[in-house]
Structure formats: structure tokens, C-alpha cells
Length: 51
Image 1 (cartoon, rainbow, N blue to C red):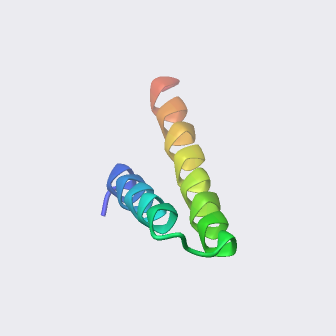
Image 2 (cartoon, helix red, strand yellow):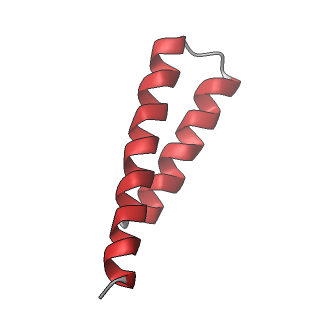
């Protein structure tokens, strides 16, 4: 699975957690995972751009 696909999947999961009223700890965990993937994505884009 590509990085952007993983980001979309996690974003959907986060939205469902919020909509379903999941416990804050679950929402936070998914949110942190999403943030880490987004940071990795941008880091990769910067590396590609600088080549």
C-alpha cells in the first residue's frame, strides 16, 4: 500500500472513530499515527524535490 493510500485509510478511520464517539485515547492514537504518516509523506516529497 502506498503512503498516500495509508494516509487516506487512516484519515477515514479517524473520522469514523470521531463519528462513533470512540474513547479519546483511541482517537488520539489514530490521530498521532496519521500525523506521523503525513510527516513522513512530506519528508519524502522534500527529498524528491531536492534531487
